[in-house]
Image 1 (cartoon, rainbow, N blue to C red):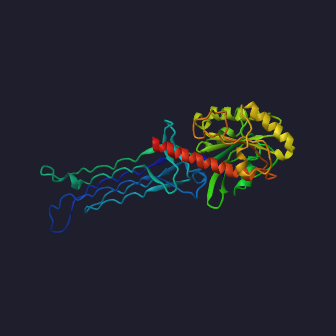
Image 2 (cartoon, rainbow, N blue to C red):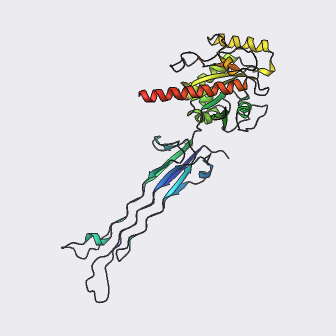
Image 3 (cartoon, rainbow, N blue to C red):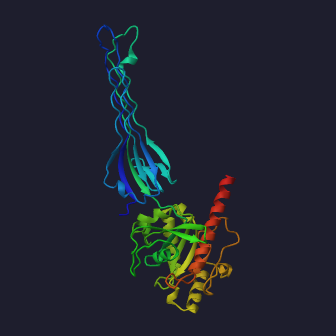
Length: 375
């Protein structure tokens, strides 16, 4: 079962109490205090593990608690430290304080281990309170309490390219064609009910990660359909590929602008992601019809056709709009980096799209690296 959000109460362990004890031994009349210290309570850690892909293992666990420290004992014996608790989560998990809404941790790196809650300190035994004026102390410290927090864990997929489009636009078919992912594919809307990840190989040594989410409809940012629940899974993506259905009853310009509006309403940051456009299901139309529709779509959004995408060996001479020469600068939200008609079923231009996206991901990474070095 795919679970991407859970609420938990997490507590670190309480420190053990210090002991009140006096040394009593044959032939030793006044042995003095010998109460040992209590053990520290167990701490709570988060660990990122690539072998975990959902939060389903935490579902139903309402309270996760580290072990309390053991109390001290006589003969200056220290109490045992409480066992730590490690919560294993998939990469891309965010820890949010339920009460304040504050983001406490953002866990993205494989193998990352972060201490979340420190265990309570153990109390001092009465041997620490002996003095010239108090040679028989009957006082020891209690252990400090642990820390309890109510948190919400949210998992957001980490991918290089996120697929965005209306339901039944061909996202699942495309990701199954380009990658090793095998999502359910059927001819009805909302076939995809959970996000899917796939690795797309570009050549022998290069690859990038692609994420598919359920379809977005008008009003998704207000909770309609499944889009709002899963839009968070493309928040971490570096680029977006908007899929426009050429055979849909909705005009292509309307589909495109609706998707941009819903992305902007959901997240201002997400709406500024660099994006490209793939016009899908062109196998249902003739080449002349595809060219006419594509030219109209480009004109509607203020672009002109060019042939710069021919370097990616497109299968057929469809109209396309290629990379801009000023790539890397801030582009208008409405302007895609390229527009390419494709058919995932007939494998038309899918290889061209694979290499175009691979090049786009590399360019974005290079630009981000340059921006970070300048900062």
